[in-house]
Length: 120
Image (tube, rainbow, N blue to C red; front, side, top):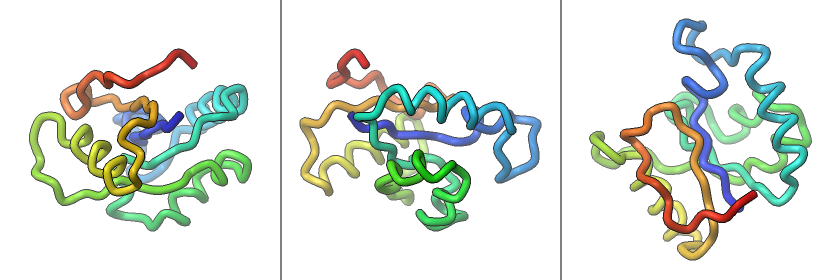
């Protein structure tokens, strides 16, 4: 199972300093992921524009960072469902179009409901 992860609004609250996770958010997220060992993470956050993959991994503890396998590509037109298109492009590029996936994003307009989801 692939998890496409946004950071802002998910691991960082709107009023928090830019490019800094709130301390309690990653702790809860990482604890939850430990129970879901089959989940691999793809960064879909705008942070991919500011930081390299390895720099983004440093925001997580090592066992979770090792499960971050890539980032979506930016640069697609910015409008409704932008991140959804980025997810589909990532899957297509990897040859994983049939892979189950889910996205966690605070901006509902950027992601459409996925049709290939399974219960975790």
